[in-house]
Length: 474
Image (cartoon, rainbow, N blue to C red; front, side, top):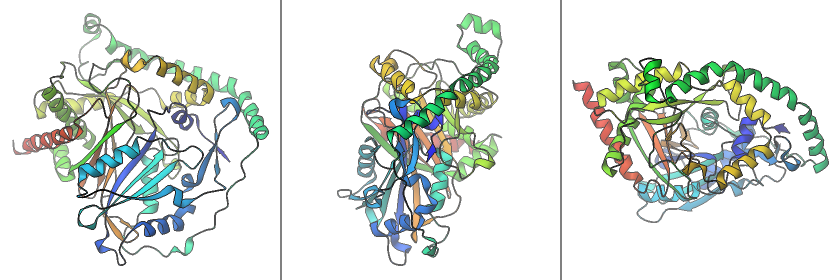
């Protein structure tokens, strides 16, 4: 048995039927180079050979009585691989929009908590014999970096898979009794005063940061007296946008890619980071989208930008080691050049300190019991808070670095990998990017009612990339 961290448990406590908190990916496989082809049976065999290297895939949740302490993982004694790996097909012609619609519908469904929290779908019927693989894992088990580590276990650097002789027989754990779990909860309760003291001490140390963040949320006359240079600083309330409010249970998904070489040329030409170019690209695409709908405001949108706080010693560990920044997206600026310069400045400001320290976040989630967190989540859901309160974020923008070389699954080449991430009440749009080979591949996930034309937004990304590429000719 292993206990969930407070942050991992928080992803479980905050989950509602209309807001499942799993993250996923859509992989496109070309089986033409595989010696014996590729299909469902090959994927099943790959999982069987490597399950001993994928502990989260065997973990099943065990709750504590009355939610008095964070839950535990046990190795599922009744693990059923065929339950988790499924086979479906898209109707003809199997184009990208049909595929995206199927993925969106599956992505909207919560995972079964009585089993290990993951599912994989082998999707047949794509053009030219290609195969899609959509996988989803609960956010309580992985973050972006640990998710990439899992891909590294399943995928190979060469078409010939390694010898499967390392397969190990796996033995599950007996589920503990309610009495045993109650005793564990009691021992955990003894530690709560210590957790509270540590949380208060670290939160007190973070007060200067919160004060600086409050400065930029102050009324305009006060901000002018506080000092200049606040254009790139975030506010504690993001401006109104069509991406904010209470979510429906339904999702939309769209995917695409841009040349990584062009992104890196822009980075070098403008002396900034890849992530700065990404933020400018997102800002420009959303400006186009909002202008077309007549919903562009004079204020810049703000994004939650997850960042990994995983140390070198924590590489290979599962679960979450993340924090988040507030990144200003310069949707209010008219040209691509201005947006790129402003995005770089905004990210520099963000990295200089507008995130609550990871230690404070970790202590808070460790202190809050599941019962308390779940009660709070139900209360705010009943109050429809996302329609009443403006948060610091309009959307999520996440950029996860991936491998620059081709990867193979059971001998078949992986052509592309598109992230399929999570949204939550108040934040109805997620833009996640993953670099693979010579492309920056991205997936857009949105509430179905908030963004009825998500593929038009994808077109805006390509149009913005073309305008940014023109900067290289100036």
